[in-house]
Amino acid sequence: MASEAEQLKRARDEFVAQWGAMGSQWGINRTMAQIHALLMTSPEPIGTDEVMAELEISRGNAHTNLKELVTWGLVRVVVKKGERREFFEAEKDVWQIFTIVTRERKKREIDPALSVLNRCAEGTKALKSPEGQAFHSQMRQLEEFVGFASKVADRVGSMKHGFAIQMAAKLLG
Amino acid sequence: MASEAEQLKRARDEFVAQWGAMGSQWGINRTMAQIHALLMTSPEPIGTDEVMAELEISRGNAHTNLKELVTWGLVRVVVKKGERREFFEAEKDVWQIFTIVTRERKKREIDPALSVLNRCAEGTKALKSPEGQAFHSQMRQLEEFVGFASKVADRVGSMKHGFAIQMAAKLLG
DNA sequence: ATTTGCTTTCAGAATTCACTGAAACTTCCA
DNA sequence: TGGAAGTTTCAGTGAATTCTGAAAGCAAAT
Image 1 (cartoon, chains in turn orange, yellow, red, blue):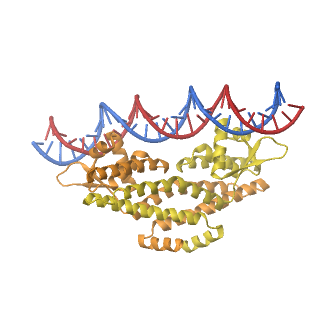
Image 2: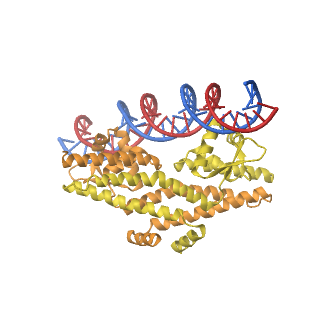
Image 3: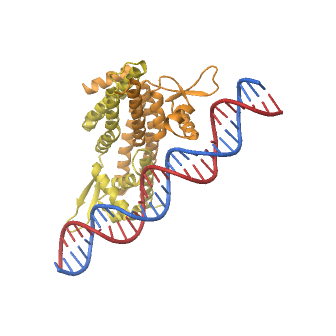
């Protein structure tokens, strides 16, 4: 029978691999998601070389994606005393992860859409033809809806964990 | 000064182009998003050849993406009497579009994640070591949260427009 | 000032993903 | 049954993205 350590390693490897594959489905690149998975399940901060070894990727790749994760706020840089190199540690709180991803996705997906819709609606508001008015109205409807989504995302993203749970419970009750 | 028809055409072209670019940001391919934008702003159903001409794409490409949109449920096939070829018409109701996209994204993004997390959690529940238990607990937390998200998506996706508006109003109030 | 240990950048290679165009297929009509 | 009109498929091509590896940069230690 497999030792505990083996079982754990196997589960963790699967998690890393699958979380990476999932990253692709979301708009996130595979390596970035894998590194995130690796860090989320690491008992302690790890360095670039460990990441390289574990995922069998190049230094450049590891570096770029670690820094991108730091930019997102999903990962923090840790300096150990007596050590010259940098270590990395992931945010592990699920609600934190969620709010960060929500913020980031809103920025990339919702905000640009809103600005396009606004421009298209404004540019056609004076049209007189039936087709022109239909187009304008369609743009306004989309704009209104996406604006709504934007506000909801802001609101949810700034909620405290407990409050969100309450809210969701009410929604699902 | 530009005629109304020109203004409309320009606005529509911009919408199609930008909605397409946005599609990339979301996990949707550019052409598919462009066709969707084209159909959403078309006063009447259009055929494959018009799509090809308007977007300057090949027949194969137009065909594949039109059919994919039909599979999603964002576009319907329309047959005109006396016409042999198929025409296509987009769902224009914003709330409908939203629920369809929500359902589809849940299927592609949330459900697979849930199954991975479940597998990883189950496979480690008997571990005794501190690292094993930490891993298990992390998987459980993620699983619980994503399960929650899954239920919320279901619930929201099956709401009637009016009810959702009410709910959102309360959330934003 | 030089070395050492690590970080950062980036041009080109590799990989992945989307698109084309043409052939095969299906359906309707004469 | 033949053929005209339209649909579907897919091998090959092309574009976009991601990754590598090596060189350059930087700062602490000697």
